[in-house]
Image (cartoon, rainbow, N blue to C red; front, side, top):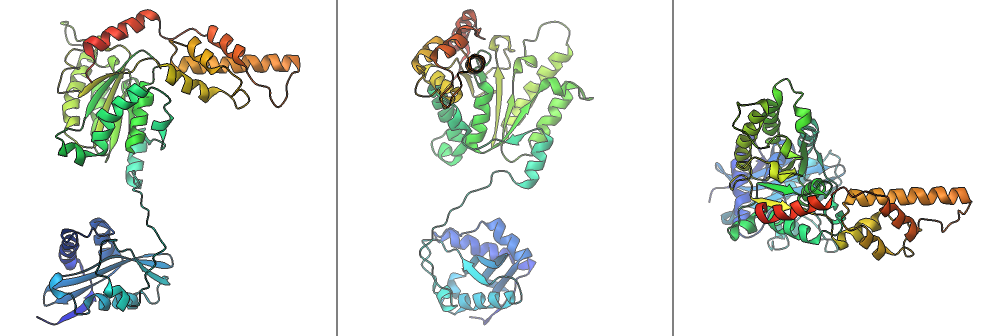
Length: 427
């Protein structure tokens, strides 16, 4: 074999480093750092290569972080192992760091990597009392800036868990949407195509927007809400603004996009001469197939009046699922009530009575009734001078609040919703 020597890595060595990194994976050992980080450190930090003739047979790459430096990659061609190359590269890295800030040189080695003699020979001490934790940060700085320009944002974590009750809807959304999108590899294994677009329909105030945000939180994807009423003021017109907005959304890495009250721009087209609104509907019908071509995207269209949507809008091929979101069930109403009970009222309020009395209420109705009850109890307590550390609304206060609250969804709308489930739902 030709003699080898060690030198600083150059740009024309990157192909050789890539080859060594891939060989590590093929040998069943997943490198601690992804390839993009390794190549970036080759260019910007400290890296050395072992070269035999024109061939890169070894590479050691490091990155500085304050007073500590990390080995982000250490690899040797299998045919050149046992020649002292690994230890020599580590020592050369250390020499090049002298005069820099780091006082410690550390290395993360995969648990299934057995070939660690190079580190021992170079004077590295093995630390066994540590565990490594890692979390991927979903939205990077450049994407966050682009997201802000679109009026989007990252949803807070655990928003999915904060949606109380609604177990049937949550299980359906978890299985149909979240699972195949969060685990595309598993979906492919079972022949499941991850969804690209869905419709959520149901009476006003039932939580369709909340569910869309919770899905984004669960997936750790960016969330963008498109407001047709705001786009209408664009000089390009609503259709042009809609097209440009979706073009910019296409630049995001991952995104859940919500169009709420989509019936405003996708209502039934008539046989009359084309109107500006029909042009918007036509534009949206063109946008959806293009949107579906990109992975890691989910379009959620929410509507209170699914019967008013254009028939072409709901056809198979545009939307994977048409999912009903109804009024909160007993479990959901109990969870919502618990959210609005002050600490002084918990344990002494008949929660079951509130759940029963608020049947047919939306989450917003329950919030209004709870706040009304709290305000009324506060006014009575202040007026009567009966305020102490245990003061707070009681069961009767809440029942009065419920009785004084008009339900947002009348019985006839509930009946229509049930009919729509039978005729239009696709789950």
